[in-house]
Structure formats: C-alpha cells, structure tokens
Length: 273
Image 1: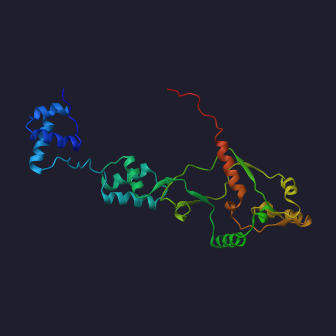
Image 2: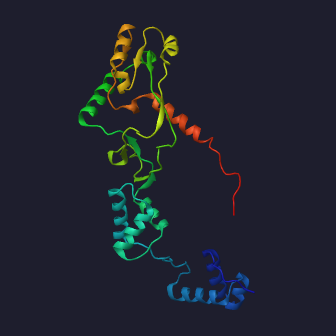
Image 3: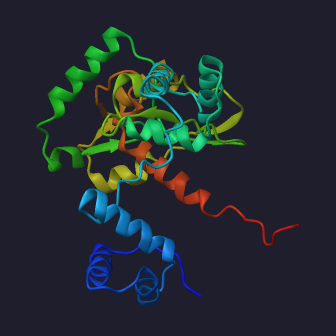
C-alpha cells in the first residue's frame, strides 16, 4: 500500500522528469511509494508555477498579539514578584481570552525576562550608603597581608525555621544587583538562639598579637563593658560601616555552610500511590 509522505526537492524534480519522459502518475507514485494524489498535486504545481518547491506553511497562529506580549512584559517589570498564574489571570481580565502558563513564560523569555531569586539586602538610608562607599574606597587597595591581620567575627543563629524564602522575581540577564531586583529585609526577629562564645583568643594566637578585631556593630559589641575590655587589653578595633553584613566574609561562609547542610535533609524513601 502506498504511503502519503512529504518528498524532498530532489525526489520531487525526479518525479517531474519521469512524467515528462512519459511515465504515468500511477507509475511514478509506485516508484516513490506515495499516493497518486501526491504526484498529481506535484504535477499541477509544476504546470502552474514551473516549480516543485514546497510552499511555506504558516503554522499555528500565535495565542497572543504583539500588544498582549508587551502587556505581559510590562506587568512583570512593574511587579517583579508577580507569578505566572497571576499573569495568566491578568491577561484573561484584560483580554477575555485564556492562555496557558507556558505561553506566558515563553513571552517573558522572548522579552528577556527570567525567573530568578532576588538579592536580599538590609534597608539603608543615604548616610549609611555614603559610609559604606567611603569604607570600601579606603580599603580597596589593602594587600592580602593587611587583610590577614584582621580577625573577622560574627554570630551564629540557629532557628527552628529558615527565613531564606523561595521568592522569585522576573528580571533581565546581568541585572542581578539592580535596585529594582533587590528585596529589603530587616534583621530576623523570630525565635532562636544566638551563640556568642569567646572564640577570639584561640584564633588571635594564630594571627599574632597585632591583630585587628572586626565586629558588625551589634549592640552587644558596643556595650560599655566591651569597650573597657578592649581598651584594657590594648585591642584595636576596625571601623565598620553600619548595616553591612554583606561585607563580612563570614556571612558568605555561613551561607555556604547552610546550603550544604540542606543537602542532608532526609528525603522520602518511597512514593505512596
């Protein structure tokens, strides 16, 4: 039984050549293993257009118009934390037509928008921003040897629940640190335990007697008894800009440790159906 299938241009021209040599359409169809109607349409096209190349196929019409594509991209840019289901609902409310979540994602990707986790930062006022910039400029030329004399300290907080969140935003590539793509978050005030043990002395011996103590300006570190202790022991403290946890390398190490610790959470051993 002959099959109806698409023919490459080489076979289409060969079929025309056979028919010009006198072969019938049925004979050509048997040689190419296609239906006779395929050969007949091929011959009709050759007679009318003097060509046998396949005509372009328009394909399925797009589910959205260019104006609706701009609407979706603008909605995602104005509300960075909006979700795909919300955009589907917004589009239906604006146009009265339903589109799939896949269509919304494709339109956002075409506009250069991808779902990413936002950068989380503490709220800063103008004075704090200027102080951070001045501190960074003062220390940008420090050598590795100078930084080696700094004893960085930080607190460890162990909480019952994580506050990292799973929030995602829509943003363009290479715009991670743009202000519109960051989320301000105040210091965590939930229940937990802070461990503030005296770990300075063991590590200070490894650095040397002329080390510089760094702390994050937390209120316990600025208490009068702490100031007196540092003065009595002749300890030098590094000036540190307020509300700058991202400048402390220990913060990044703790974040990496937390990520690795998440890998040890138990997983279901079987699927219940």
